Image (cartoon, rainbow, N blue to C red; front, side):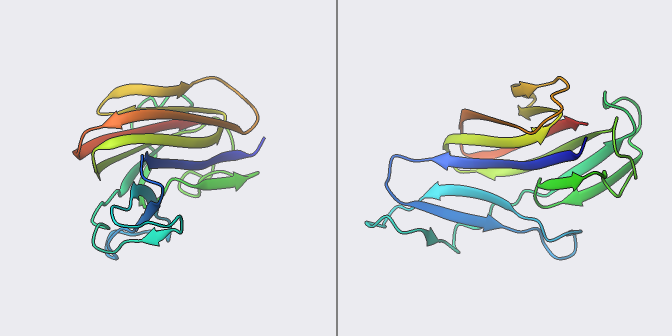
Length: 171
């Protein structure tokens, strides 16, 4: 089967009509790819329903530490590590280049992200299995062999400030 962790995205759900999309990229010196983290927040002054891109609030930074394991249980010392700016991979019939493995591997992504306070919807697309933690609390889990692409979303109320987000995945 093809390995894919197509998306992890946190969107702030708002009462206001107009969302403000904030696109955050890692600093050049730490970026190893062109991926990005997208977090949506409400636009305080917009009165229409068109999308507004804000520059002054784009200070949130989520650079993910990726740890690659040669087993499905995240056991032992990682075979390799890297940093990524966005969790969005579809390896088709391959696997991560860091470990050159097609099946029976796992990856742990960890980042300290600065959130505005409010409700966030965490959106995932994956195969085979995924777990998502916020400040070490597991709140989204499908940890079983699925064999096909799944979509799983979960809402969380998050206080303003820095929070650790951890994503565990296996194929």
